[in-house]
Length: 146
Image 1 (cartoon, rainbow, N blue to C red):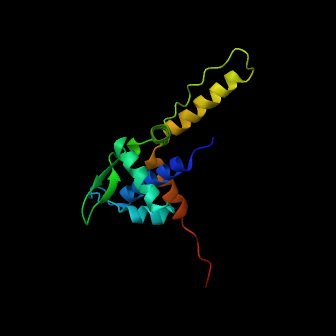
Image 2 (tube, one colour):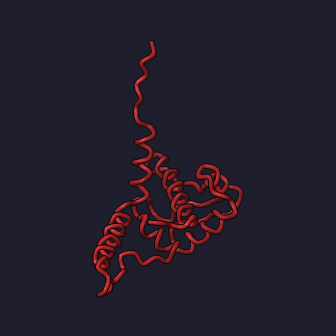
Image 3 (cartoon, helix red, strand yellow):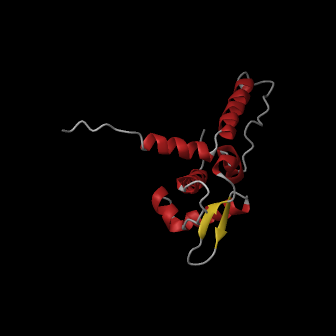
């Protein structure tokens, strides 16, 4: 599956906000994250990120706060936002909607592939991704030095 750079950056931005959200102690107030911080951590050009975040805000994935302490934060909990819905919003995709042509011997299989991909994307939340990433990168590594 090929996705645009815009979609890749949108996914990284939502992932970054989800990671920041989950890093807070349970019950702590979520504070806005500055665009420059997201851009630096995710290696996204800041001007392009501004446009992407504006689109994500318009689609209800993020909120913004103005002022010196302003920035962006998730509009919903990371476990309530799926990769599939962000991809469809950014790309205006209609995954899983391919109708097999009668004269295409592969039509049915491509339709099944589309449905399988959509299923995986729609069952994967940013909360799942952020927790999995954190566990993978904070795993205990024994130090055998004496």
